[in-house]
Image (cartoon, helix red, strand yellow):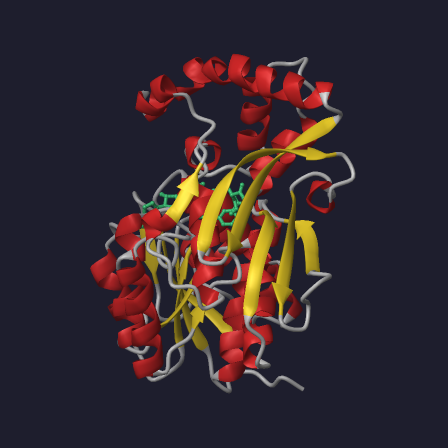
Length: 374
Ligand SMILES: NC(=O)C1=CN([C@@H]2O[C@H](COP(=O)(O)OP(=O)(O)OC[C@H]3O[C@@H](n4cnc5c(N)ncnc54)[C@H](O)[C@@H]3O)[C@@H](O)[C@H]2O)C=CC1
Ligand SMILES: N[C@@H](CC=O)C(=O)O
């Protein structure tokens, strides 16, 4: 066997049984970080139970029942690997064959992949996802995912979808499991918009900061998904539904920052047209500055009413806190009726998101009895 082929497979010494078979979809910003973290976990022995049997993106894929080498698979982002195959969602079930726990890890922003979540779950394949298009779009899809997961007993790991792994969904679910009703939630749910409004000073053009946030891996593949409030709408829908408020997707009132002309621009032209953001944001900033306030992109859910948009808040307002990409969510419930529970921390970035995805995968491995929790 040549050295090149040997490198494609995981070293035998790192494998433990019973294994959990993993298929990774997406090798972009987040998927590449997943591969690096998986390799590091396998080196330490901690993640050795996770055997990467399929890795693919929209152009290239590779599979091996014996386990692929995660470090080698980072190359898939730009080129095929030897012995690879064309990508195809229909191949995932085959790649994850065997009577062992199986997990699809979705690190794409693809609606076509999200449309498969319920199907995989119903066939007993666990799903771990960073993509919000599963639970954060139509209520019908959200219900299908829940129904499939319940009927087949398969798990849906969604920690990375809101707050990039911060314990936001988990806290809401824990409160409800303890008998609390969720009264309201409010806060900053976008890491990129947090970063933008933590850095924008009204002097340098806003569009330059958007490029910086994109290059740092904080934005969606198309930053308009963030700037339009669409990404925050999805996150608020996921939180609201977890809180027991089953909202239809169009029930969220959204205040977009994207001027109509910029919304029409083709993705490959976007960079050259981003300056369309500069004047309106400079005006919003100047208005807030005159009042001694700060701009924050806030999501709110109360009494079944949901809205997301830019707000001008007093400097000492509780939702103004945080730095960098910090998300900050206040949760009011029966026990936190007056003073809310407030959770804050980095809410975007490849590192924290990859960690959240692999935490979910390891949690599923533990629940499946593949690793000891002691
Ligand atoms: N960047 C961040 O901080 C966070 C990102 N996320 C989510 O992570 C997901 C991935 O984001 P990025 O890595 O930034 O995007 P990206 O654009 O860098 O990578 C997306 C990857 O998905 C692949 N892909 C697209 N369609 C596919 C298909 N049908 N089958 C297989 N692969 C396909 C692409 O080829 C690419 O490798 C998004 O859903 C995003 O919302 C979630 C939390 C935080
Ligand atoms: N683009 C998103 C990434 C995490 O979900 C954000 O800015 O929060």
